[in-house]
Each structure stands twice: as C-alpha cells, then as structure tokens.
Image (cartoon, rainbow, N blue to C red; front, side, top):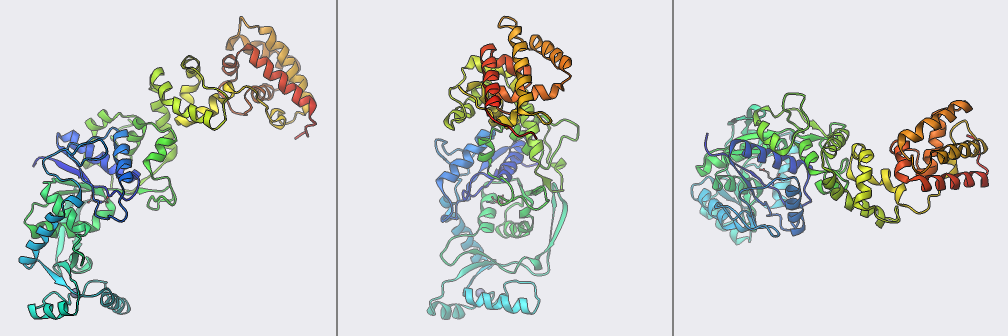
Length: 502
Ligand code: GLU
Ligand code: ZN
C-alpha cells in the first residue's frame, strides 16, 4: 500500500456542517489508524460565498472535536504546515492554469465558444426530444479559422475536457464495492475553466489530489457520481488514481437527506446547547460505522484503534438526536467533578444573564449538587432546570401547579400545613434525605393520602416546577430554613387565591 495520505476539503461557504465533521473524522481516524497523513485543504474558489468567519468556524469546530491535521493552511493563529502547499485553492490558481494548458496542448481539452443562450436552446431541444442532457460537442473539432471567427465576434471561450463516449468507468469503492458508471450519463465534455479563467470544482479537486499525492479519497456518497469525471481527469493528467471510499448519507428521521431546513446541522449549535466533544465525536463515528459489537461509548483514542474503512456501512445513517443525548449523558457522567463544574459554568452564567437566577453558585455549592445533578444531564444546558430554584431569592410558584389533581386549594393548603409541621420537627440538625422521608411517609399513611400527590405539592412549592431532582435531596440542597420559608409562602398563596378544582 502506498503511503496513506487523506484529506478533508471543505469550502468555507457556511459554518461547519455535521456531515463535513463526520467526513473529517473518518479521514482522521483512517489516517491515525494506519499511521498516515491527514491533510486539510480549503476549497475557497467560490469567493463570493467564502468568508474568513466560516474558515474559523470550521477550524474551531474540528479542533473542539479533537481533530488535528498534519498539513494545512494558515487559519487564525494556526500557521501553514506541510510540504505540499499552499493548501488554499485561491493560492494555487497558476497550478490549475498550468494543468489546463497541458490538457489543451495534448488535445485532451479544447476551447468552447458556445454562449449560455446557445447552450440553453440546445438543452431545451434535448428535453423536448427526451434525450439525456449533455453538451453536444459543437466545438470539439474547431479549426484555428473557426476559432478566429468566434474571437472576432468577441466571444470568450471556456475550456472543456473531453469525456469519451461509450466507456464504462469502473472502480472498487472501499465502502460501496464495485461501481460502474457509463460515461454517456456524465453530461458530455466537461467545463473545467470558466470564460473568466477561473477553474471549476471537478478540475481543481483532481489537480490538487494528484499534486498532494492523495492515496484515498474519503467523502460523502453525494460525490459518487462525480468520481468517474475525476478518474478520467487523473488518467488524462497521467496521475495515479487514488482509492475511493464514499460514506453513507446522513438522513433526517424521515429518511430524507439531512438538511438545515429540517434539522440542526451546524456543529456550533450543538456545542452551544451543551453537547460535549467526547460525546459528539463518539456519535459522529457511529453515523455509518460501528465496532460490530455492543460497544457504543468510545473515546477518540479508542475510535482510532478500532476504526476500519472496510466496515463502514453502505446504508444511509439516520441522525438520532435521542441517541446523541443518551451518549452525551454517558460522557457527562464520566467527567470529574472539577471538569464538570468548569464546563457547566458558562451555562449557569447564561441562567444569570437571562434573569432565571439571582446569583451564581460557588464551586463548593456546585460540588455539593453534583451527586443529584450529574447523572440527570442529557446536555450541559439542562443544568438550569435542575438547579435554578436554589439560586433565586423569591419563588412565586403558580398555585394552580401546586394543587394536585383531585385536590382543591383548601385541601392542599391543609396538607402542606401538616407536612410543614412534620418537616419542621425533623430539625436543622437531622437535615438529611433519609431523616426527612420516613416521617412524611408516616403522615401520608395516617391521613390516607397518596404519597405522589403530597410530594408533588411540596415539590412545586419549593422548586416552582413539577419536575426536579429527587424530592428529599432537593430539600437538603435547599436547606432547612429556606424549605420551610417556601412552604409557608406556598400555603399563604393558596389561602389567598381561590383556585378552581381540576
Ligand atoms: N469541497 C468539496 C465538499 O466539501 C470537497 C469534496 C471532495 O472531498 O472531493 O464537498
Ligand atoms: Zn461549444
């Protein structure tokens, strides 16, 4: 096997897309697993849509995931690295011109003077005649004299690469197996340079993959139909044809191709919602690949160790947010207390900024809460729902939420008053979950209530919400005085308001 050299070649025309991150990861895993080289190349020839902000988003997103490359362009503070540069296509323009000049000299490409109007008219004619749309080859055999006439008319030509008719291009894709594509479906001779001299994607990708000695092209299945064009270009340039591996599409739950219209596709948005990189990279690896065992929770190092291109699935990979959240929860549980507190801090600061809490918990307060919080976080941003009630001065729970089904306001107020007495009797000194629970259960039994109903009323009274960490732990976290004060306030509000029975 030649030296493994693989690349990711994103266009900085949008934020880092989940699909690009998955392709980057698979290239990275393959390179690291085989001791090869991983290259980052920026396909920035679409100058109108490319921005530096998108470049940075892509760089930061991949770094966040722990993906580093051996060769690549300078971006932000990252210096250019590698001896096959430059790694930005806009800095390689003379190389494309050179390659086009050679193809023209060898008559593997030619100048085409057709105007957009002429091409359009021909396309309509082909549609009407139900022919496969393709360039009709009108300029394929122009003489010098024919060209001179067009030049005098003021036409500026494009460069077309000759696509042979009636040939089958075959290749053995590492994921998809043997693939054969008929050259007659490729649309005829291919424009490789526009009339303004700028090169087009199929051409630049083949020139660069050849120049950078890429051994394996690992990319999304949406590129499968482009591959015969690239193979023909490699052959015409006298370059070795790399091996191909086309990764399965990532699908929405309705099995349509994942798009930002139906799904969240920007990696930065997942990060902002409190997915952690350990989980996200783990999940991306499982989009189209698995170890073949039950193992699901795998670190980047473990993924590098296990990953094989040959075991990538052919079938589309449905993006399953529930599974991602589950994995995220698994990874959050594995974090050390200090690490988790650090990662939660920005999310808690956001609660303060949004006015949902009145002050920030200290690290010590956070540490005390972790035993109830850590295993209940599907995302870091869920922390607010679990702890906000502790860090607000005044809680004004909605009386309608406090009153359990089948109870009315008066019954609830009376029950809470009895419960308040029982809780007060536990006392500050014995304030622990297994000291609070038994007397309350005894009370429920004596009165013939349902535990769930009383406990729900207490829960809403002290947290403002019908869902919280376990009730007795919650009371301990809140403290003796504040628990009693909140119960008093709830009883007061119930008494003051006429609450309709539900
Ligand atoms: N810029 C292309 C893309 O992001 C690269 C495709 C390729 O890997 O050849 O889809
Ligand atoms: Zn033409």
